[in-house]
Length: 443
Image (cartoon, rainbow, N blue to C red; front, side, top):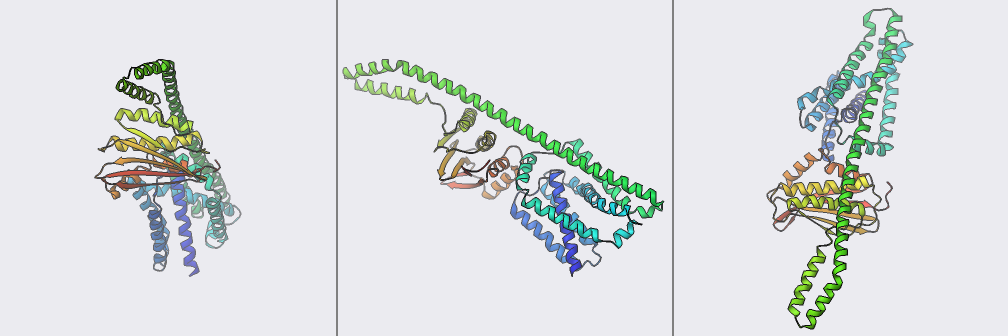
């Protein structure tokens, strides 16, 4: 019984490694729905327990992690699904070559490889202990690191040469690992076999380190590219904001300069008893004053710049933006504010622009209660859109571009919360995006 449970644990370790390498080396976009993950992992564990009692040789149990990982890649990919089935081969090479390193060290001080594999199996327990300690530390203390990596790799994809290089390296490591394990079968002198294995340790370490270094370098490049794009977007929004502000100030000075004349004209009209003309003059003057302030005001200069830049573009498609409430102090970086507001408004504009809705208006609402800042973005959607199909399509495009996925990353960076849903208001459906930020959160 203990042996069967130990084999199940080994299969779980293998499956975890396959997923981690698939996500952080190959940047595979797996399920984003927790319920789907729970169902998939539960099915894997149930299959492991069922098979362990019927598969006496244990061959099927060893193959199960590779089978489920292939299914995971196939289901989560949007294209090249069948090509993704072969991803297990290079990843297996990376895993096995890592395990080969301690075995190779032991072989340098032993008579044969078979004696290590078949008799002295204490190294297996050491590897298990190291794995679970590392995995627990990864889950427990690596939250900040994972959040940063997820933020970087959300829009990260491997270039063709990077993918080919990693695939080739993984396949080479797989073949080389098999050769090391079968070194006793070569029937060569012990000195030469030990030199071969010793040199192999260096090769494996060098190749695996090179892969990690290449991925990290690519991640840094992607991060700075994204930051540059957002900074450029924010600076452009600021420029438009200042241009509008200057125009507003000129209008205010002009009206202020003419105010004495307006008052004098009204005074004369009232003295002459021309009340109707005076009322009309006041209405015209009021309209002129109301048109002076063309900006939306949120209470935050950064958000003002972003929102008004988006409003200027939205007006080209006859889309209006209304704001209710004021923003309180937010401990959020300018780039993250740009990420949240730019993507939320862009998504709303896109939904209105390409669908028929009677009233083209994006509603933004702010509320603050103690240490919580509430943000709400609300836009109409096409009436025929069903809730099921809506969420299916929305969940699909989370993984593309600067969409809801990037908003979620920016919000969760400050321990915030994001939620979105469909709302029916009479005869009209609305998409509602709600965000909660904590005003005293640490950045």
